[in-house]
Length: 250
Figure 1 (cartoon, one colour):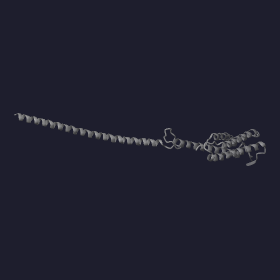
Figure 2 (cartoon, rainbow, N blue to C red):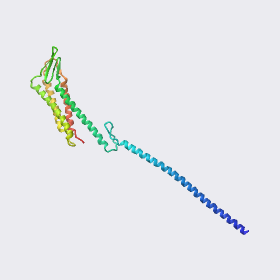
Figure 3 (cartoon, helix red, strand yellow):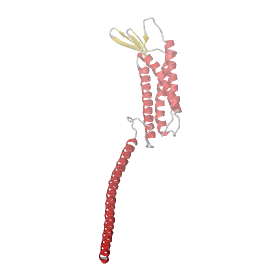
Figure 4 (tube, one colour):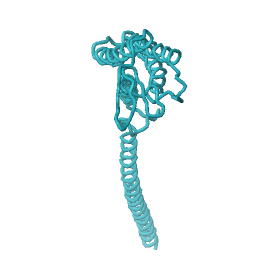
């Protein structure tokens, strides 16, 4: 009996040991499965994170490319531009536009002086018209002209208008020459002197003509050539002042 009971106890102990071993193995398997699933989740999160980082980098690159735009005449400059060349190129475009405007203004003044000096419309009235060179009149269906006269005042006006025209032309030549030969940071003083002298000459000529013009009482009045001379005077003076403050930049 004692041997039988001892055998039963040994069998129970063996069963308990087997259950413990099986329980430990089952726990290890479950832990391994949990670790695999956790690793799979982390792998999925890593792929998502990697794709998100790549997408963010592409968006940053796209925004950077949109900011580094070279400004043109039709693209306004933005102070958020990251391109270090954006501001100099923008200022260069503005400077070229300004120089073009100054050149166009000078050409307009030159045209005004040519028309004012050559046109026969300093004094008009009825069938007659007088300029700096001839006095013309329409009589009996014909147009007859004679020299304007040999008075000192008319010759002075002629000389002053010719001088203003020549100085304005020389000023234009000097501006183009200095535009290419002047050192960086230099001013267009030579051009400005010619242009201001041209304005002084045309002003003096217009004043002399205003004071000395003969009034024969026939209802004559000043013509458009006289008006153009007065219009050319302030424009010529403003142009000369612009040349004084203008600096050459590269």
